[in-house]
View 1 (cartoon, helix red, strand yellow):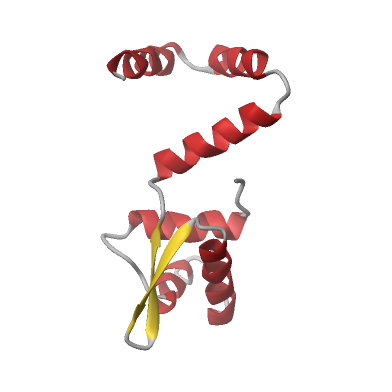
View 2: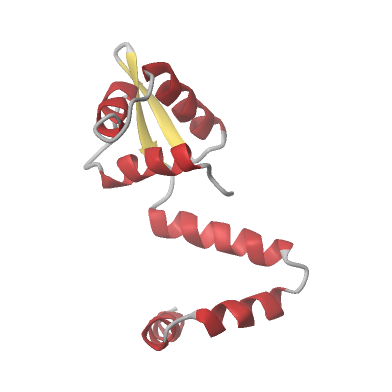
Length: 115
């Protein structure tokens, strides 16, 4: 599932956090670099929860949001979706692998061996 720019920025804040965050905490972190309305951040987090990209847990009068997957797991899922949708998974994968620098390719081969 591809994410929009603001959704990616919100997810980056959640991934960087030590634990779940409230809308206010995400809003404060994002507003260090830009001027966003609180309700905009709240809407983005609500949409991410509906897409099952984040988990939402009630805590007093606020919700706490956390990533449903690690950044690496989500990246892999997006890549698998793209490969599946390509029509020729083998050709798309071969092209992708051909674009990797040698050290990344070696790390991928080593990771595959470990599984």
